[in-house]
Image (cartoon, rainbow over all chains, first blue to last red; front, side):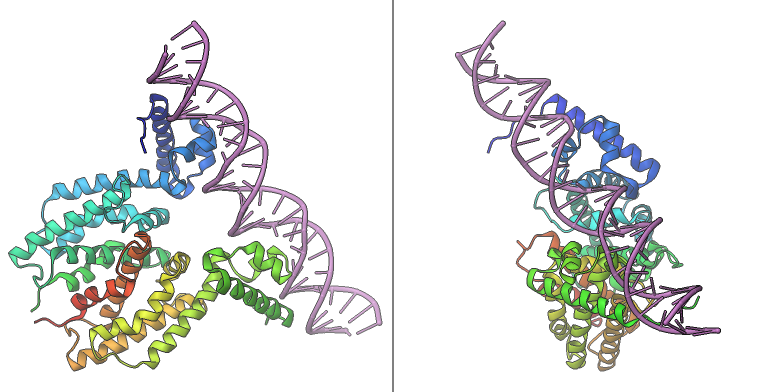
Length: 198
Length: 198
DNA sequence: GTTTATAATTGACCATGGTCAATTTACCTT
DNA sequence: AAGGTAAATTGACCATGGTCAATTATAAAC
């Protein structure tokens, strides 16, 4: 199957859609995004949006993916954590971003595990990158002896991912009448998961 | 606020709704459940369904909750596992039930963490019971020395929950082109999470 | 410049979940 | 039995995401 390069017009339309969607999302939040609003404000028909994005979640995934990538940049810039606590600190901005809106979490979870399948997907790429980043941290931390050494850094990285999702799920379920923020709740799990045998 | 006991009629209506919904779900699967179908086959108006259940997920939660409770009964009957592997075996039926349909996972996840808030909710009750069961297993296993003793059994139980959700999320994301079943994937995580320091 | 093939867009239409003012039914009081 | 009151039910209506045959714009071929 041969695919032709997209025309200018299409790229412009896509850019405009994303611009409008971003605008709506930043002023009203992710949950408030309505397909109707996006197409109306973009000045385009509804069908057009769905020819650019598989579904509403596909659009959201692009928006959210961009944010996640930004956070990953920040995290990467901070360098390898010196302690398990510091992992939590590095993660805090990402966690509180996801914690602001349930739909962010939902979209991330839906696309989370597709390791390598179609890497063009922003979310997938983000997850791969995140796991890779975690693994590189952990590998170095293992060498310094502040993280357990009896299993691979990849396994440990995936575990962090699991705990991340766990505390986020709790965060949304308890309707925030909970005292712990996601990153506070994460801390003890990481300690038990990562600390070397005594 | 005083609440009067529900009348016979209401109980019958609810029972009929659940009966029909169960029928649809067992023949066509959870994803195929349509509110329209349920009310039509029950011979009742749409509004009635929503006066009995908060929303479609609320209805699903009752159906799914019943199944989960059944699985918990089975698990409880099997007694305390003798090894970490055996935990996976005990969990396998529950895991493969959840693995059959994404909506089961979604509903469970949405209601998962509401620890104690309104225990009338079936799902919440199921989760509380599950965590309690895990914790009791782990506590005994800790005493025999086959599970790490450097943290509470409740913490370990919650961790199992996190890994359960993790492998299930992976299972649905990879569209099953994955070789590992959820319970196969779970095994290594439990080993690393639970095994005592060497 | 005309023709032609394919990319891009359109918008009427559909599917499905959910709401709520109005109506009917059941129960209690006198 | 009549009347009153709250529970239970109704169904027309709405909100929102998504589809697809038909139409229009673009670029390549001649």
